[in-house]
Image (cartoon, rainbow, N blue to C red; front, side):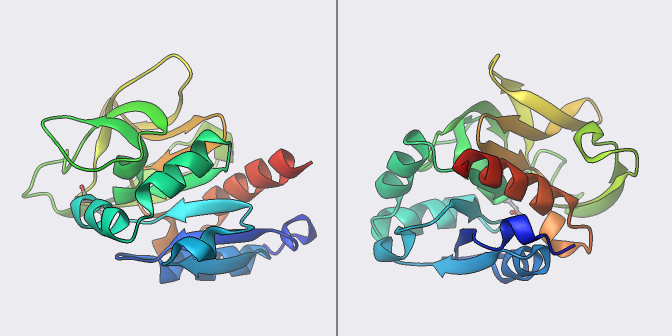
Length: 200
Ligand code: GLN
């Protein structure tokens, strides 16, 4: 639902590759302003940034060649709130199991890519996410990662099959699934509340 508290928030969405448009639609439904980010100058003045799903190796390479990786790392270190979904979760991790790819490394999590097996490319599951209340959240998983291990500062918000699939650390939020592909706005609202509280 559109919330007047979110009216003055401008949220960037990294739009190099992947499912960025759907995030813009979800943010606008919540009452915030969405700005697609492809260039460094488009990062100026943002209240937060979403790193969308897609292919994390591709997103990482493009971030390096567009000179966005170090810039966004710096903004995260300075405290800019970020929300990573699926490949975005991988990008925010400090480490990938058996992987060597450019990462932002802003969250103390180690992740396994394509963790649910290559055969199981996608599935849906009703998820219990206490932070969102009683109603289950419709989780859409597409070649999803899971959180293999997490440091003490990380709050695991949801698990599936015993593995972390949503987490928060300070102003960073990640999900292994794709809330932007559903009509359920609760995770975008949770993120916007984090951003709003950060601004006060
Ligand atoms: N498998 C992709 C990766 O590891 C993530 C897939 C997705 O974002 N839907 O980057």
